[in-house]
Length: 244
Image 1 (cartoon, rainbow, N blue to C red):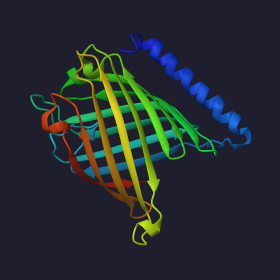
Image 2: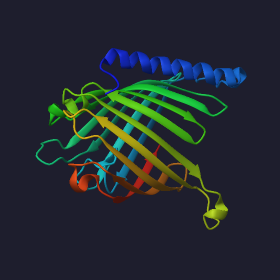
Image 3: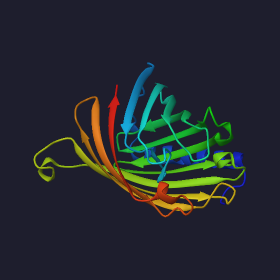
Image 4: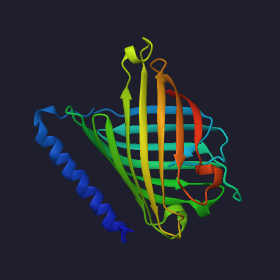
């Protein structure tokens, strides 16, 4: 593993975020967006045919109903996210993720987000763990790294690296229709043997924005994870998302 100290990793994330902030500011100091001085509230709900997380089904390939609420102020935010889950040999049937962090965007297309996520399973506390997250973005490309010193409460570290993109489709490529976009993701989960086997996953996405509140998507996901059986195999899934 690359990191053996939780505090060291946090310092590295903070340093990377500060460096990215300096670079973005140097591109055009006059382009920095002014953060709202008001609190903002948003909510999101999703119905999906399969809850895929980092290439692995968290519902034994069954459907999931998910939702989140977010409160943000001047770049600082707190999110509570939830979903039904299903794991073989476990009593866990609910996942609750609590996220706090800071994000910033610039007119030149740069953005970053630094956060911490607490994964909680009320009916199976032996899965609970804390993870630190850093996301850097430029226009249509996003890259990130997530690290936990106690992945899946295994007493072993895990670091997840990922890159993804989502590109609006011109109407001429979508039979004259608007609101379509395509995307892709590539991720690598570097796990200590106590937490599981390291693996790579990848996927594709086709999304259609129906209106200001709803969008539908079709996605394909696959991984080379060993020991996951059908949970990490090739899957197609459909999702309906609502946002306010």
